[in-house]
Length: 239
Image 1 (cartoon, rainbow, N blue to C red):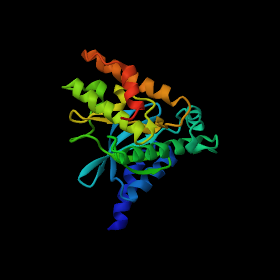
Image 2: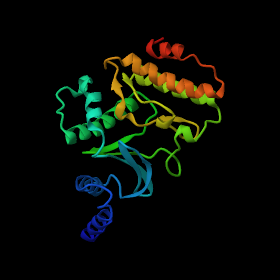
Image 3: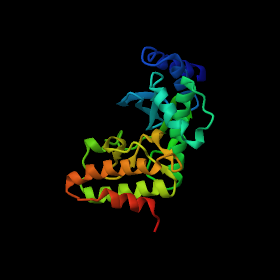
C-alpha cells in the first residue's frame, strides 16, 4: 500500500515536468515525501523571482514558494554580499538562489520570534520554501487588491509591526509595499521577506525610510495625512 502511495505521488509530480526543472521537481518530491505537503493545488502568484502555489496538507492548505532558477542571481548576490550574515558566499548561481531561499526562511523565523505578523516558515530545501497559508479559505489578498475597511486602524497595526521588526527582530523589510502586505481579514501580514536585511546592513536607515515612505504614501490616499519622517523617527527610537 505504501509503495502504491509513493508511486501515485511520483506520477502526480511527473505531470509538472514541463513546468519545473528536474532539480526543482526532485526537491518538491522530497518535501512532499517528508510530509510537508501532499500535492500542489493552484498558483497564487507568479513573479520574476519566484512563483507561489497553494498545496494540500492533510485537510488544510500550505503555501509553497519556488524560487526561479532563471532569477536574477547577480542582483541577489549584490544584496547579500553586504549582509554580514552571508560573508563568504560564493558567486555561484545555484548557491546564491539556495541561500536566498534560506535567507527568507531565517528572516521569517527571526521576525516571528519577535512577534511580527509574517507567515510561519515550515521547511526549506534548495530553492523551495514551504510556509503556512495566510487566509481562511485560501490565500488572503494583497493589500493593493483589497482596501482596508478602516485604513487608520490597519495602518497603525502595520507600522507597529514595522517598528517591531526593526527594534526587536533587528530587521528591515527592504521591499515593503502594498504588493508585499496581505489583508488577512483586516489584519496586515508582511510577506516576501527574502529582501529583509539585518539592521547593521549598510545604509539600513535609508532602506527603512524608503519602506515607510512607500506605505505612508499609500495610506495617505485615504486622507490620513501621515508625516513619514515622524514615522521613521518613531521606528528608530525606542520609548
